[in-house]
Amino acid sequence: MKMPRCPLYLLLMVSLVGMFLLQGCLEDYLPKKLQEKERSESIIPGENRQEEQEREMLPEGVLPLRVYFMEGKGHYLIPVTVTIPWTEGVGRAALEKVIEGPTPAQEMRYGLYSPVPPTTEILGLTIRDGLAKLDLSGSFLSYDPGEERQVLNSIVFTLLQFPTVKEVQLLVDGVALEAFPGGTPGKGTFSRERGINLEIAVEPEALEDAQLVTLYFYTVLGDSHIFYVPVSRVVAGGEDIIKVTIEELLKGPRQDGFLFSELPPGTVLRGYSLDDGILSVDFSRELLNYKGGLRGEKNISAQIVLSLTEIPGVEKVQLLVEGEKVTLHYGTSFQEPLSPPLLVNPII
Image 1 (cartoon, one colour):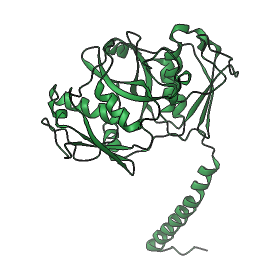
Image 2 (image 1 turned 45 degrees about the vertical axis):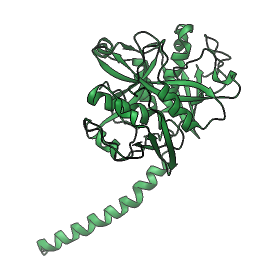
Image 3 (image 1 turned 180 degrees about the vertical axis):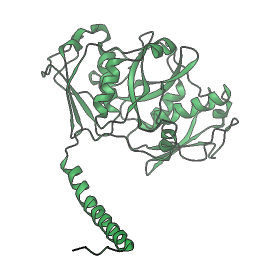
């Protein structure tokens, strides 16, 4: 017997109802499956409007990661932004980039290199409760013991860029060493308190009544390329961390290095306040005596914002001059609070 033909509108209605029902089921099902999947590397940095704008500059499906390479003279570790295809295992991907080092073209153009032996293999990486436990192959220990601080810091600070990582434990072939080849104890963990590009010859832990501040200056590499460089400076303990960071930044880099500051001499701190993650900093009028045109303005902004957002609790910085929000001569705006750039020293 011939079956009656359903009207076309009825078939469309049934199809639409089915799609809505399926969508509802998927909305209930997918979150549960995602929750069931253990994500030990849930470490994608948070985003804000400025980061969204910077991401729009990147090709679709590309993830920017910060890794630490050495500049050619071997004095400073420099954070650089590299890109990889989007992946969930960003911690491992960042470390693989550190081991791989810059491309030959990047090495020639910028004079950068990785201090980590290229034969190093990642045997395991877990991130839980703020602790990143990294297991490396024995070939990792083939580095020059005299460069041990840079080697360890290139790995440690690459992992510390992620909000869920507060400490790093390094294993070699599954074992926590008594000491690394250069004498660094291997049983404990590493954190930001270790300091990067430390300006003293002893470990911070060996000093009594002292604290570290992180300051960003800049250097010029290759064919006039500006790179921002973090420096850990030891200051007296007990001082207000915001005040002392700003004052040390205004002092500038040490004279015996090859770092520079765009902050004009004579600039002084007039006051500051921290409210809901936004740090308002008021400088004297001498801040406007900068040189270098637009590049100088960008350097001033980057140095201050990168330095101050290293302080726990500071998310954005509102820059003031004599109590006023200003726009600098070449168009750099201090009218709104500034976030640290997502793409620091990009070599993409």
